[in-house]
Image 1 (spheres, rainbow, N blue to C red):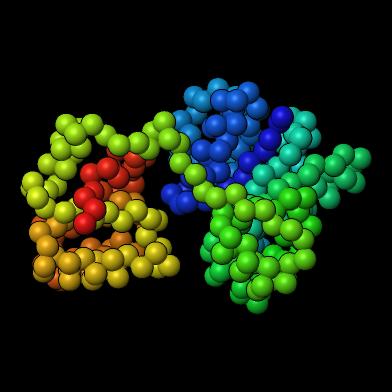
Image 2 (cartoon, helix red, strand yellow):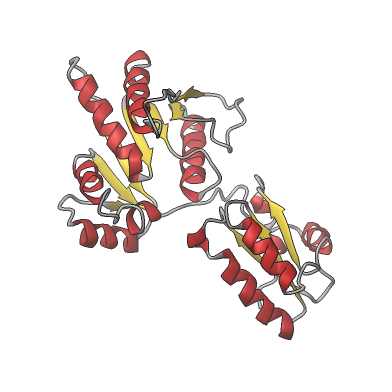
Length: 278
Protein backbone atom coordinates (compact mmCIF):
# COMPACT_ATOMS: atom_id res chain seq x y z
CA UNK A 1 0.00 0.00 0.00
CA UNK A 2 0.90 3.68 -0.35
CA UNK A 3 0.29 5.29 3.04
CA UNK A 4 0.58 8.91 4.13
CA UNK A 5 1.37 9.46 7.82
CA UNK A 6 0.98 12.74 9.69
CA UNK A 7 2.11 13.29 13.26
CA UNK A 8 3.81 15.87 15.43
CA UNK A 9 7.46 15.32 14.49
CA UNK A 10 8.84 16.48 17.83
CA UNK A 11 9.93 14.54 20.91
CA UNK A 12 6.74 12.89 22.16
CA UNK A 13 4.94 9.57 22.34
CA UNK A 14 2.53 10.04 19.45
CA UNK A 15 5.32 11.09 17.10
CA UNK A 16 7.52 8.19 18.17
CA UNK A 17 4.75 5.63 17.64
CA UNK A 18 3.81 7.09 14.25
CA UNK A 19 7.40 7.17 13.05
CA UNK A 20 8.24 3.67 14.23
CA UNK A 21 5.04 2.38 12.65
CA UNK A 22 6.05 3.97 9.35
CA UNK A 23 9.53 2.46 9.55
CA UNK A 24 8.15 -1.03 10.23
CA UNK A 25 5.55 -0.74 7.45
CA UNK A 26 8.24 0.35 5.01
CA UNK A 27 10.36 -2.64 6.06
CA UNK A 28 7.41 -4.86 5.10
CA UNK A 29 7.34 -3.37 1.60
CA UNK A 30 4.76 -0.61 1.92
CA UNK A 31 5.44 2.86 0.50
CA UNK A 32 5.32 5.44 3.30
CA UNK A 33 5.00 9.21 2.94
CA UNK A 34 5.41 11.39 6.04
CA UNK A 35 3.56 14.71 5.73
CA UNK A 36 4.65 17.05 8.54
CA UNK A 37 6.13 20.52 9.13
CA UNK A 38 9.57 19.03 9.77
CA UNK A 39 11.18 15.64 9.44
CA UNK A 40 10.26 13.38 12.40
CA UNK A 41 13.23 13.13 14.73
CA UNK A 42 13.28 9.32 14.58
CA UNK A 43 13.86 9.38 10.80
CA UNK A 44 17.43 9.48 9.53
CA UNK A 45 16.40 10.30 5.97
CA UNK A 46 18.04 7.13 4.69
CA UNK A 47 15.24 4.63 5.33
CA UNK A 48 14.24 2.69 2.25
CA UNK A 49 10.64 3.09 1.15
CA UNK A 50 10.05 6.30 3.15
CA UNK A 51 9.60 9.80 1.74
CA UNK A 52 9.20 13.06 3.61
CA UNK A 53 6.99 15.93 2.42
CA UNK A 54 7.34 19.22 4.27
CA UNK A 55 4.29 21.32 5.07
CA UNK A 56 5.28 24.90 4.34
CA UNK A 57 3.19 27.29 6.42
CA UNK A 58 2.85 30.71 4.77
CA UNK A 59 3.52 33.86 6.74
CA UNK A 60 1.56 37.01 5.96
CA UNK A 61 1.00 40.16 8.05
CA UNK A 62 -2.74 39.56 8.02
CA UNK A 63 -2.32 36.27 9.90
CA UNK A 64 -1.59 36.68 13.59
CA UNK A 65 -1.28 32.87 13.73
CA UNK A 66 -0.14 30.95 10.63
CA UNK A 67 -2.91 28.63 9.35
CA UNK A 68 -1.04 25.35 9.75
CA UNK A 69 -4.16 23.18 9.57
CA UNK A 70 -5.11 24.59 6.15
CA UNK A 71 -1.56 24.27 4.81
CA UNK A 72 -1.49 20.68 6.07
CA UNK A 73 -4.81 19.84 4.39
CA UNK A 74 -3.53 21.26 1.10
CA UNK A 75 -0.29 19.28 1.32
CA UNK A 76 -2.17 16.10 2.22
CA UNK A 77 -4.38 16.43 -0.84
CA UNK A 78 -1.37 17.18 -3.08
CA UNK A 79 0.67 14.21 -1.86
CA UNK A 80 -2.42 12.00 -2.01
CA UNK A 81 -2.98 12.92 -5.63
CA UNK A 82 0.62 13.13 -6.88
CA UNK A 83 1.73 9.86 -5.29
CA UNK A 84 -1.57 7.99 -5.62
CA UNK A 85 -1.90 7.25 -1.90
CA UNK A 86 -4.27 4.53 -0.71
CA UNK A 87 -4.66 5.80 2.85
CA UNK A 88 -3.85 8.61 5.27
CA UNK A 89 -3.03 7.72 8.88
CA UNK A 90 -3.10 10.72 11.21
CA UNK A 91 -1.82 10.63 14.78
CA UNK A 92 -3.25 13.04 17.37
CA UNK A 93 -6.70 14.33 16.53
CA UNK A 94 -6.02 18.07 16.68
CA UNK A 95 -5.65 19.35 14.03
CA UNK A 96 -4.54 16.36 11.99
CA UNK A 97 -7.88 14.58 11.69
CA UNK A 98 -9.59 17.84 10.74
CA UNK A 99 -6.98 18.49 8.06
CA UNK A 100 -7.32 14.93 6.75
CA UNK A 101 -11.09 15.32 6.55
CA UNK A 102 -10.69 18.52 4.54
CA UNK A 103 -8.11 16.88 2.26
CA UNK A 104 -10.47 13.97 1.63
CA UNK A 105 -13.26 16.36 0.71
CA UNK A 106 -10.95 18.32 -1.61
CA UNK A 107 -10.01 15.15 -3.47
CA UNK A 108 -13.61 13.92 -3.60
CA UNK A 109 -14.49 17.11 -5.47
CA UNK A 110 -12.00 15.97 -8.14
CA UNK A 111 -13.41 12.45 -8.32
CA UNK A 112 -10.94 10.69 -6.02
CA UNK A 113 -11.51 9.41 -2.51
CA UNK A 114 -8.67 9.14 -0.01
CA UNK A 115 -9.75 7.43 3.24
CA UNK A 116 -8.08 8.31 6.51
CA UNK A 117 -7.62 6.65 9.90
CA UNK A 118 -7.31 8.69 13.10
CA UNK A 119 -5.28 7.40 16.04
CA UNK A 120 -6.01 9.00 19.42
CA UNK A 121 -3.05 9.22 21.77
CA UNK A 122 -4.20 10.84 25.02
CA UNK A 123 -3.95 14.56 25.61
CA UNK A 124 -5.60 15.25 22.25
CA UNK A 125 -8.73 13.88 23.96
CA UNK A 126 -8.25 14.24 27.72
CA UNK A 127 -6.98 17.83 27.68
CA UNK A 128 -7.00 19.72 24.38
CA UNK A 129 -10.01 18.04 22.84
CA UNK A 130 -12.27 18.78 25.80
CA UNK A 131 -11.69 22.52 25.45
CA UNK A 132 -15.06 23.88 24.36
CA UNK A 133 -13.45 25.72 21.46
CA UNK A 134 -12.14 22.42 20.03
CA UNK A 135 -14.66 19.82 21.17
CA UNK A 136 -17.28 20.18 18.36
CA UNK A 137 -14.78 20.08 15.49
CA UNK A 138 -12.80 17.25 17.12
CA UNK A 139 -15.97 15.21 17.55
CA UNK A 140 -16.94 15.88 13.93
CA UNK A 141 -13.55 14.80 12.60
CA UNK A 142 -13.54 11.61 14.68
CA UNK A 143 -17.07 10.71 13.64
CA UNK A 144 -16.19 11.21 9.97
CA UNK A 145 -12.91 9.28 10.02
CA UNK A 146 -12.93 6.08 8.00
CA UNK A 147 -11.37 4.33 10.97
CA UNK A 148 -10.47 5.30 14.53
CA UNK A 149 -8.03 3.66 16.92
CA UNK A 150 -7.01 4.49 20.48
CA UNK A 151 -3.88 3.43 22.36
CA UNK A 152 -5.77 2.07 25.40
CA UNK A 153 -9.18 0.88 26.53
CA UNK A 154 -9.27 3.78 28.99
CA UNK A 155 -8.78 6.31 26.20
CA UNK A 156 -11.45 4.66 24.08
CA UNK A 157 -13.98 4.78 26.91
CA UNK A 158 -12.99 8.37 27.74
CA UNK A 159 -13.54 9.39 24.12
CA UNK A 160 -16.90 7.66 23.86
CA UNK A 161 -18.07 9.23 27.12
CA UNK A 162 -16.76 12.79 26.82
CA UNK A 163 -17.40 13.24 23.10
CA UNK A 164 -20.54 11.12 22.82
CA UNK A 165 -19.00 9.29 19.86
CA UNK A 166 -21.34 6.82 18.16
CA UNK A 167 -18.87 5.06 15.87
CA UNK A 168 -16.67 2.13 16.97
CA UNK A 169 -13.12 2.78 18.18
CA UNK A 170 -10.59 -0.04 18.02
CA UNK A 171 -7.90 -0.32 20.68
CA UNK A 172 -4.38 -0.83 19.32
CA UNK A 173 -1.98 -0.58 22.28
CA UNK A 174 1.34 1.21 22.02
CA UNK A 175 4.21 -1.09 21.23
CA UNK A 176 7.96 -1.47 21.36
CA UNK A 177 10.41 -3.11 18.99
CA UNK A 178 11.39 -6.28 20.82
CA UNK A 179 14.52 -6.57 18.67
CA UNK A 180 15.77 -3.44 20.44
CA UNK A 181 14.00 -3.38 23.81
CA UNK A 182 15.51 -6.42 25.47
CA UNK A 183 17.72 -7.06 28.50
CA UNK A 184 21.36 -6.07 28.17
CA UNK A 185 24.18 -8.40 29.07
CA UNK A 186 25.34 -8.11 32.66
CA UNK A 187 28.59 -6.47 31.53
CA UNK A 188 26.86 -3.86 29.36
CA UNK A 189 24.32 -3.15 32.08
CA UNK A 190 26.99 -2.74 34.73
CA UNK A 191 29.03 -0.44 32.46
CA UNK A 192 26.01 1.77 31.81
CA UNK A 193 25.03 1.96 35.48
CA UNK A 194 28.59 2.81 36.50
CA UNK A 195 28.34 6.13 34.68
CA UNK A 196 25.80 7.38 37.26
CA UNK A 197 25.62 5.07 40.27
CA UNK A 198 27.82 3.04 42.56
CA UNK A 199 27.21 -0.68 43.05
CA UNK A 200 24.19 -1.15 45.29
CA UNK A 201 22.67 2.24 44.48
CA UNK A 202 19.33 2.45 42.73
CA UNK A 203 18.63 4.28 39.46
CA UNK A 204 15.23 5.82 38.83
CA UNK A 205 14.41 7.04 35.31
CA UNK A 206 11.80 9.46 33.93
CA UNK A 207 11.31 9.82 30.18
CA UNK A 208 9.00 12.46 28.65
CA UNK A 209 8.74 15.67 26.66
CA UNK A 210 8.78 17.75 29.87
CA UNK A 211 5.40 19.37 29.33
CA UNK A 212 3.34 20.38 32.40
CA UNK A 213 1.08 17.35 32.05
CA UNK A 214 4.13 15.09 32.62
CA UNK A 215 4.63 16.62 36.13
CA UNK A 216 8.43 16.55 36.05
CA UNK A 217 8.70 18.72 39.16
CA UNK A 218 6.59 16.19 41.06
CA UNK A 219 9.03 13.52 39.91
CA UNK A 220 11.88 15.54 41.41
CA UNK A 221 10.00 16.11 44.68
CA UNK A 222 9.20 12.41 44.93
CA UNK A 223 12.82 11.51 44.28
CA UNK A 224 13.91 13.91 47.03
CA UNK A 225 11.93 11.79 49.50
CA UNK A 226 13.31 8.54 48.08
CA UNK A 227 16.89 9.83 48.27
CA UNK A 228 16.53 10.43 52.02
CA UNK A 229 15.97 6.72 52.57
CA UNK A 230 17.75 4.97 49.69
CA UNK A 231 21.07 5.57 47.98
CA UNK A 232 19.83 6.45 44.51
CA UNK A 233 20.11 8.60 41.39
CA UNK A 234 17.45 10.02 39.08
CA UNK A 235 17.92 10.13 35.29
CA UNK A 236 15.68 12.65 33.53
CA UNK A 237 15.53 11.85 29.83
CA UNK A 238 13.97 14.34 27.42
CA UNK A 239 13.50 18.04 27.11
CA UNK A 240 10.75 20.62 26.96
CA UNK A 241 9.25 23.75 28.55
CA UNK A 242 9.36 22.44 32.14
CA UNK A 243 13.05 21.56 32.13
CA UNK A 244 14.27 24.95 33.46
CA UNK A 245 11.80 24.72 36.36
CA UNK A 246 12.93 21.18 37.13
CA UNK A 247 16.59 22.21 37.02
CA UNK A 248 15.92 25.11 39.39
CA UNK A 249 14.09 22.77 41.77
CA UNK A 250 16.94 20.24 41.71
CA UNK A 251 19.47 22.92 42.66
CA UNK A 252 17.16 24.36 45.31
CA UNK A 253 16.98 20.94 46.94
CA UNK A 254 20.72 20.37 46.66
CA UNK A 255 20.25 17.28 44.50
CA UNK A 256 22.45 18.25 41.58
CA UNK A 257 24.86 15.37 42.32
CA UNK A 258 22.03 12.85 42.25
CA UNK A 259 19.77 14.11 39.44
CA UNK A 260 21.12 13.88 35.90
CA UNK A 261 19.51 15.67 32.95
CA UNK A 262 20.34 13.63 29.85
CA UNK A 263 18.34 15.66 27.31
CA UNK A 264 16.79 14.11 24.22
CA UNK A 265 18.02 10.60 23.52
CA UNK A 266 17.27 8.56 20.42
CA UNK A 267 18.42 5.20 21.79
CA UNK A 268 16.42 5.10 25.01
CA UNK A 269 16.37 1.31 24.83
CA UNK A 270 20.00 1.44 25.94
CA UNK A 271 19.13 3.49 29.03
CA UNK A 272 16.09 1.66 30.37
CA UNK A 273 17.92 -1.51 31.51
CA UNK A 274 20.23 0.58 33.72
CA UNK A 275 17.55 1.23 36.31
CA UNK A 276 17.23 -1.07 39.31
CA UNK A 277 13.75 -2.04 40.38
CA UNK A 278 13.20 -2.20 44.13
